[in-house]
Image 1 (tube, one colour):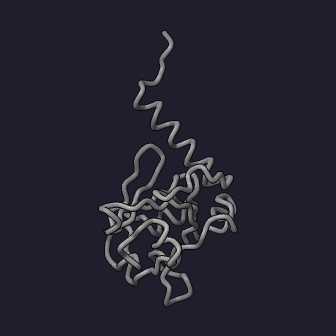
Image 2 (spheres, rainbow, N blue to C red):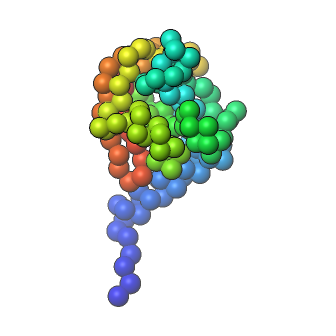
Length: 153
């Protein structure tokens, strides 16, 4: 008997494929007023992007997702506003992360940020955010369907 995916599973798989394709090839289809592609550099700003946390967010397009993975310093991600712009959700496909980022930054399914990470003004304006920084704190890292999601509120 042949097995097929149900409609929900198929929809999730297609969204994952679109996200992966968008992040790896730079297709503008996902770059709307409701979401924005970016490169995430992990680490702490005060120690030259070493340590844990998020050091900086860069406009996507300069670096490709696979290049970011090979350097093991960052990853391409999708930013989506949440709570009416009072927060932002960061979505990263697992395949774009090197194992050291997962082990060091997402240990115990949390991201520890000891310092704020400024959100570029263009990102704030485009996404309609009410926040200007990713605040220090401990953030749950949720993994589902090959994607990591971190909500910054």
